[in-house]
Amino acid sequence: MVNRLRAARPDALIVGLGAPAEMRWVMQWLDRLPPTLVLTCGGWFGFLAGNERRAPAFMRAAGMEWVARIAQAPARLAPRYARGALSTAALAAACLRSRFSSS
Image (cartoon, rainbow, N blue to C red):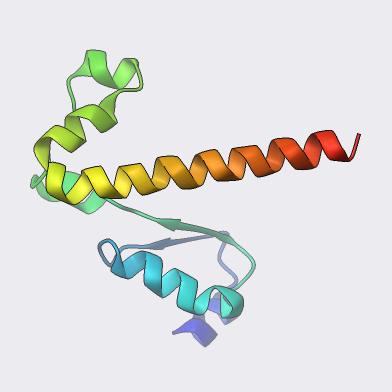
């Protein structure tokens, strides 16, 4: 599969295996994937299949859809969102340190 992807030279690769399998697959093969944008589709298929509901429009407009998603599946999503928030904060801090140390 990876060789076929490399030969196809896609502009973007969307991986939909369900979390966390899709993240593990991307990490396992990342160094052999073609140089492209790689996205995991997370809850996208759940929305398409009607298994998950979107947040009300006012929450989406306010950037708070994650609150409604956690309310739908707290045991599954709260730990994942917490890890994501921590890793995002760590990356942001590292980027800021890098930016200010090089100037």
